[in-house]
Image 1 (tube, rainbow, N blue to C red):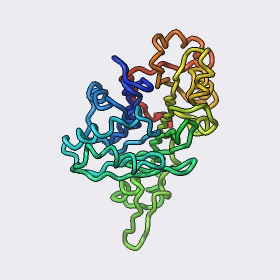
Image 2 (image 1 turned 90 degrees about the vertical axis):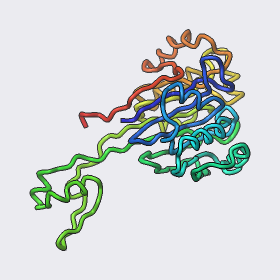
Image 3 (image 1 turned 90 degrees about the horizontal axis):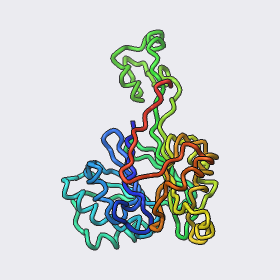
Length: 304
C-alpha cells in the first residue's frame, strides 16, 4: 500500500486555503516528498503526517515556489530527533542551491546526501522506492518523477516441497535471499513466480506536454499533473511560459492510459477551477481537481 497526499495545489505563490504544490507519500515506514515550497511544512502539519520519516525529497526544479521551504523543513526534521541520512534528488545544480539555502540552516543532526540528475532519464532505488526521473520542458531544467513500488511473485509451496527444499529456508527465499545448506544452494527463482503488478504514481509539473511524460506515465495508477490554466483563451500564455492547460494534461492522461488523473499547480488567477472540469472529462473521464490535502491509498491488485 502506498499512501499519497497532495499537500498543496497552488503555482507561483501560496494563497489562503491553497498551499504551494507539493506531494508526499508513505510506504513501509518511509516518507517521500516531491518539492518543498514556502509553507510546505505547514501543509504536512495540517495533514497530520510526521516529518521524521521523510527519507527522500525530490525537486522538479529550482524556482522558489518549489524549493524555498527547504531550510525550515530541514530544521523541523532536525528538531524531531532524526539521525538517519536524508537524500535530496534534483537537477544539476542541487548542491549549489542547497548550500545557499543552508546558510540559514547550517547545523543539522543528520547527514544530507544529494543526487544530481543530468540525463534525459535516470533510475534511482531509495528506501524501497523505485524512482524514474525524466526530463520535461520548462523555462529551466525540470524533471518529472514516477514512483514505483514493485511486487514480488507468489511463493510456490508445492514446487518447494517437490524440490525438497527445507521449510526453514522458505522465508529467506521469499525475501530474495540465496541460501546454502549442507552443500546445496537454493535460489529464489526456484520457488518464486514472475513479479506481479506493483503500484505506480507519476508526478509532473511546470512543463509543456511532451512525449516523455506520456511514456513515463504509461499505466500509472495515479497521474498528478500540472494544470496551470483552465481558461481556453490562455493557451498562448501556457506556451509562452512553458506551462499546461487542463485540456493538454487530460490529453496526456488519455494517451498514457492512466487509471486516474489529479490536476494541480493552479494559477493564482484561477478561482473557479471546477467550472472547466466538464470539458476536461470529455477528454479523460477519470480526471479530478486536486485539492490541498487530497489523499488516497493505492493498493496492490489482489487479483494478481
